[in-house]
Image (cartoon, rainbow over all chains, first blue to last red; front, side, top):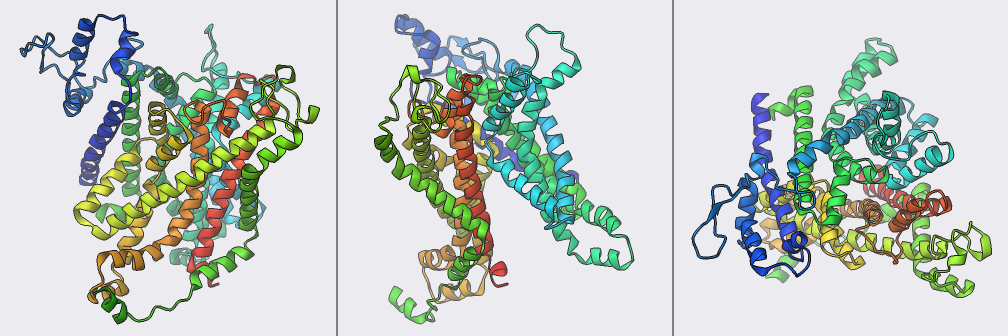
Length: 339
Length: 300
């Protein structure tokens, strides 16, 4: 098992570097001069601008800028006055050493900004993941057992709708229903501005975003479970179990469901990726201050260090999620490990 | 050389059995048929009807009339009411549909062409080329797509044409992966071996032997992808980096409606229903096509 995990970890290294390269190239190819974002306007002294450009390494060729971004430039000498002799050392430590640079607008390390926001985003995603799996699995199993009956039809419609209904629209509908009309739940935010929330208050902020966020996961998980339970039910060992005289219920729950759940483990990685994308929109709809909103805000403010940092963070989470689901799959099904 | 090869090959039966089977299957599949009809009607309505309605009711899509703000549906000839600038909601919905559908259709078609081409090449060439394409697929796939789209469309100011390019360039991954898988299994078949033994050039193998066999998968994917693209485009427009106001799209109409949530809740329902309905139709058609194009289900 250790070798399996190690192999998968090694495989994700080229992917990781690919992601950083794509993100960097995307931002580097952006039209407009990043300096103008910092200096505002043309009244700036050209000499200072030039020095700033050299200090930030923007006068260097793109591949070198990429290397600096990855491993930092504190080992390189920067030639501030352009006389060909290095004057000072760089200050950045680079992405690989946990330095994502400083936010342009907020003048704070991007790493800190992200770390601050991660817990509130995780609160949403993990709750949505739990609810999505927690409801999706039983719905899928029941839907397979009662194949073709009313419950199955209902569940299948729900699973198609769960993917087709845009999350921001569903969010708006919920806000109109539960906040504007019924006044049961807060319209948005993650805590009351004055503080002093009871745990129940905190929960009330989470209800609507989590419902919206969990729906696609719920839909996909129930669909996946339904298909794989139906498939497992046709296997020989199920017939054997029936032939032994086991009750129908025991056959389904003890023999079929346990094996049918294995494919859902592989879906975990994709689900996590989907949830991360989902939070970007859901956090915007419910004004939830998590990583997703930070990304959207930074995109509008052209605060590229934050954007780059959060894309890399999202990708790392996705890679870890996929890794986790592969490991789970390997643990649950020995055949995967051996091949 | 090519003609010699063509002569040596046994004459291929000109039957279209898979496709005619599929057509018959869809003819019996009421749900898919319904989805197809709704989608065709919506497309026609979005293309044809805005000018007609504008003419009939004497309304201009972008004409703003402050006294007519937030009219409820049905008031003063506005069937779906008016928005915060007094613009007719129905006309904007139809024009929005025009843009959303145009983006979905063309981006989905372009991404399919990229995906099928790369998938064919990767599956056929194997080795280094395959490794490179797989690496690209895994890499792009690992970045949550909405992040990439957000960055890309905020960097290059999003005209509808640019949105099509961005969505297409970032949306080809699943189709390439599917096609590659199919080609990997196809290339070991006897008839491919036979064709190769007869000296068929690579392009011939790709175009005549692989392409027709991956086409069913590709078409199913085309439909489902179009649905996903509608969702992504509307999400981008909702976030403000997609179609830019005053040009209406289903997504950005909801952004504007959110600001006036309490005043104009009639502005929320129609655009969202349109998005959900269209996506649902695309998904159902995709599912129906999958059943129809699967020889195992059609022969039953």
